[in-house]
Length: 185
Image 1 (cartoon, rainbow, N blue to C red):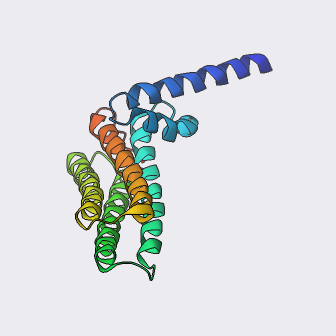
Image 2: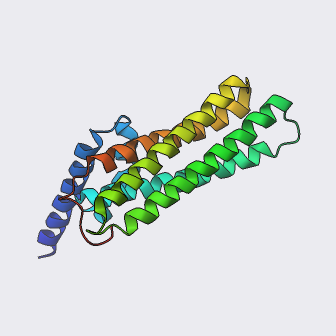
Image 3: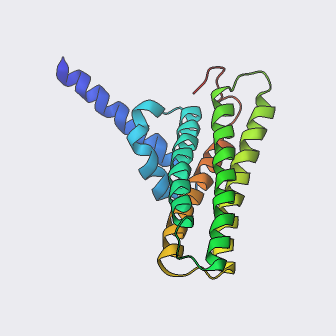
């Protein structure tokens, strides 16, 4: 009996992983998509809404962590004037990105049949805006010629968040209204 239950659990896990892999094929950063979501396969259960919600939630968590790193770097005393200005702008842009991702996760939690199109439009707008804010931060680093360790560390953090944001947006855009449930993810 236990072998049967174990085989069923194994098949469910494989099905959930395959669902994630297939869904991630629609994203630009497929490997990152699969790697970041696979450990949540039992929570996602081949549900497109849960997949998109999980991707958004993980993106928000990653953005918060990156924001902390950037804020910490911006407080260094040995920054040149142009570096300090670029980091100040990046902190602001990334703060806006985190806020927009928070709004999208909150809105996603409250999805229901009422105003569904409006809420989905808001989510897509906020996630797109977050992606733009990430890009603006990176552009500022290039324009102000921030070099070395500082730029490498910020770029690595921001690019990871931007890639996760891009993936989350693709998974949200992939949802069709028949896949959206009247309950929260």
